[in-house]
Each structure stands twice: as structure tokens, then as C-alpha cells.
Length: 272
Ligand SMILES: Nc1ncnc2c1ncn2[C@@H]1O[C@H](COP(=O)(O)OP(=O)(O)O)[C@@H](O)[C@H]1O
Ligand SMILES: [Mg+2]
Image (cartoon, rainbow, N blue to C red; front, top):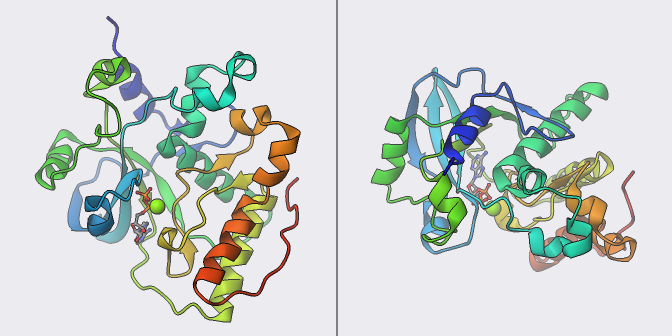
């Protein structure tokens, strides 16, 4: 049986991803440089089964410090059920995977952020940077093994996709490393909210606004994001979409309330 491994290898050596309509993220320019693994940042949450999509490390590449998010493997058809038989008929597994696999979802969100910043001439730093994607070498995969990380553990061992894809390259994003957390004062709250509103206005729903996805006042996790054009966005009923469109702002207000900093406002539509 032809496996998905060769296809995944081909994809990960492409100059930009994913291969579907919409924004595409470039490969990390120093993708062939050696990675020095310094520290597993989210070790505690990952070990206690927080259900995250990745493992984040502090690394050094060419004398520069980065955060490297290594992604678990993901079955492209995972969200097929949410589409239903009629709406799902015009969405291929390939498109679904490129838009819902957390690795590709982050590629699309960061590419959109970059493109919109450029077209609007923004240098504003409400959102931390992503410098591109890379595939790990076999030696780096062994480092993960030494940490006891299994990137396949979300997919059952007898699953056909897993069987035909095992051995595919391990995907990672190179991001700006945020070392320090900040006090949640009014200035930080405003900056966080401004970042979310700007993304919403620019075709990105992040769908995961929670305290643990922020560091230093930056939202860092776009694994569940929908970036336009998106097959789920396109195929969700108008009625449900009106709730979906305000999800980031509602989650932000809930988070702020839980932190005891709440100033309630009614969420408004901020989308194009
Ligand atoms: N760029 C970064 N710099 C520093 N720490 C980070 C960075 N990105 C993520 N982290 C840390 O790693 C944790 C997990 O990252 P996240 O992207 O939320 O992964 P997951 O998809 O597994 O939830 C975050 O809660 C944060 O503490
Ligand atoms: Mg997270």
C-alpha cells in the first residue's frame, strides 16, 4: 500500500505550507542548522495530560534562542463528523487536514498575521513572531524519544492513517521565545485584547483564548484557529456562525473575569 510517508516528506520539504487556498507559511530559513535543545518548557502540563497538541522547547539555533513547538501527529479526517454528510461532500480529507491539523492551522494563522501586518505596514507587537516551519532530523527525533515523548499517542495504534503514516517527518514551528510572564495590569489586558480583535478583523478566529495559552501577554497557541478561507467556517450555518464569530471575545472576557479583572462588555462582531 502506498503510504503517506513519502507525501508528508514531500510536503515538509516544500518552501511554504500548506498546499490549500489561503495563507502559507514559509520554511524556517535556517532549517538545516543544528538545534541545541535547552529545556522542555511545557513539560509539567504535558505530563499531566492537558490534551495539548504539542511540546514546546527552548532551543538555540545559530546562536539565537527560540521556542520550538513540536506537533503531535494528527489524522486529517478528525473533524469530518462536524461537517456532516451533505456539507462534508465538497470538502476533501486533504483540505480538512490542511485546515484543522494544529500544525497547519498554526502555519495558516501565522502566515495571515505576517501578510496582514505587511500590507497594513504594522510593526506593532501585540502578537509574538513565528519564523517558519521545519522538519526534525532523525537525531532530533531521538532527543524527543529520550524525553519520553510519543507524537502518535492521540491516534489509536490500529488506525489505518497511523499505520500508513508512521515514519513521517516530525513537524515543528520556530517561534519567538517569550521568557518572562508579565503582571496582568490594565495595559497588558488592553494589549492582549487589541491583538485578538486585530486577528478577528483580519480573518483569524483563534478559538482557544485561555490563560495557559498566553505568556508575557502574548497569545501563543493557534492550534485550533480558523483562518479564512476555511472549510469549517464556510460550512457552518449562519445561525451557528454568529456565536462562533464572538468566541474569542467571550473567552477573553471569561478569562479576565476568572482572573478577577472583569469589566464586562457585550461582544460585538468584528469580522469582515
Ligand atoms: N513562544 C513561546 N515562548 C515561551 N513559552 C511558550 C511559547 N509558546 C508556548 N510556550 C509555553 O508552552 C505551553 C504550551 O504551548 P501551546 O502552544 O499552548 O501548546 P499546546 O498546543 O500543547 O497547548 C504554553 O502554555 C506556554 O507556557
Ligand atoms: Mg495550548
